[in-house]
Amino acid sequence: MRYFLAVAEELHFGRAAARLYISQPSLSHQIRRFEDALGTPLFVRSSRRVRLTAAGRTLLEEAPAVLTALDRALANTRLAGTGSAGTIRLGYTPVSGFGTFAVLLAALQEEHPDLTVDAREIFSAEIPERLSAGELDVGLALAPHSVDGVRSEVLRREAVSALLSTGHHLAAAPKIPLAELRDETLLLFPRRLAPAYYDGIVAACQEVGFSPAVRAFEAPPVNAMLARLSTGREVGLAPTSFAEHAANLGDTLTVREVVDPQAAADLSVLWPATGASPAVAGVLATARRCAERLGWLRGPMVRPGYRAGAAGAPSATRSRPWSVPPIR
Image (cartoon, rainbow, N blue to C red; front, side):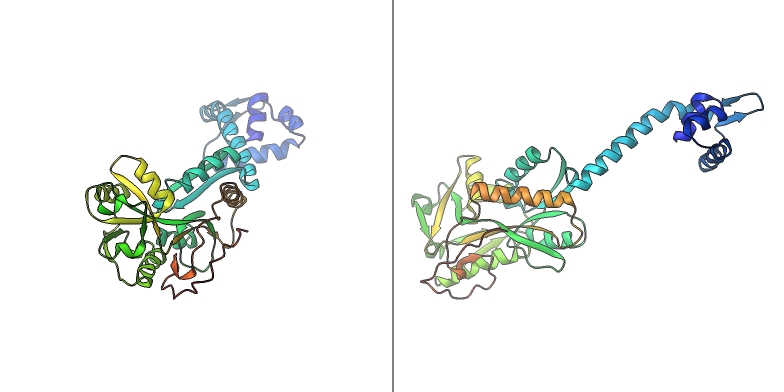
């Protein structure tokens, strides 16, 4: 393009070649190659003068915008290479959307203002596979299963709380022992959408002597489930941040702590094991700073058998609390 612009501005191959510090034959050759690539002549040449064709005049008019766009693209490419800019495809599970994801997104906007986050709400079970397939760059999943080529670490650990109608007979109690849910119907997402979390809830119930009655709908919208809880007799079990935010949306739902035992839900951040970009590293660093600043890993100290996410959780040693490892 710069060869074309020099000749178009000078309308003289000799002066243009001198301006570019190349020989005139070399410049003529480059212009011929450029015209061949475009499939049209750009100049009318004669022994006395050089003038632009209609195509050449059009290109000269468009060239400044093209060069500006190219410069911008190159600058953005350099920024993306350092992790300061670019687009990150981030998949997050619905239960993280009301708390963790919103906080992380705000932190990313502050720390990486040139980074674009393409956020996609996806159920936990789908996130590891989409990362493995290259469809996502980062994921936030509840108790994700292991997939080759995908790394993960716990980002937030919090208690599982009961979300129920303000008119429910258990809403009067400040805390609900898990055994009190024996005769209740639990409204949960289908097991296939978060298998380890679902199994952890069932295992905790079995540990206190009952198998829960569960009602699950196929890929239900979150708002539809909240509406059902507010008008029905089911009890939802969800991470506390999600349950509290949902209850604050109106005056028909309330949150109650579940105790004896207290179960915990692990939300993990996931990323590709190989080929992760500097931008992904920047997102992970910001996520870890959020976890440290807000104490996301100082979650409930519960026995191993009651951690929501420990599929088929075994009987726990009741005298030894579960230790919370630091995020690294």
